[in-house]
Image (cartoon, rainbow, N blue to C red; front, side, top):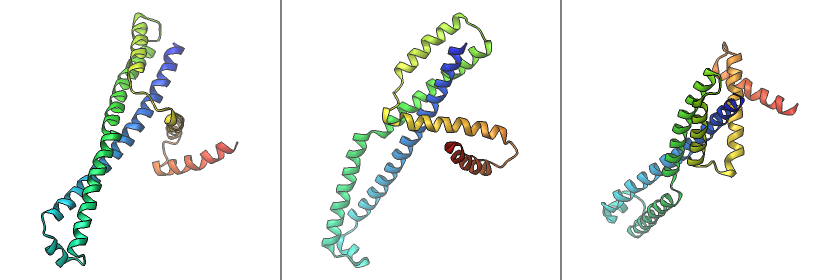
Length: 186
């Protein structure tokens, strides 16, 4: 039973970590896609307008507009190559899949803990736990401690919210933030 509770804590922490990474990679992927789209629209607008027309409505000469167009085209190409190399969308999908698999495992673990007792289902769960942990994308070592810290703060803040149900959320957040400095000094 204690081993199941330990695995439940590990699964909860892994869900938080993978969710944080999923959200971070998703935000990066959306931001760079948006930047690339905006630059491509600007580039196409310039390309489909004559340099003489553009120089008549701006203070730039046709040669300056041509240079700007080349630089913009190079920038769009460079961002596209960077996107291929960093592959944030694949990382997003990997962490999203890990979250989904871990969440299903968490539900199974909770059910086993509620049934409270060793059973053949516990052995099946342990095998599934090992399989899922071995097959999901690992948490990068460089990010592990920061993500673990984030998870522990999240757990403590959740407990704090349970103890302060009548307070508004924003006040709880502020109070928790201030008290976290006092707790670290002790």
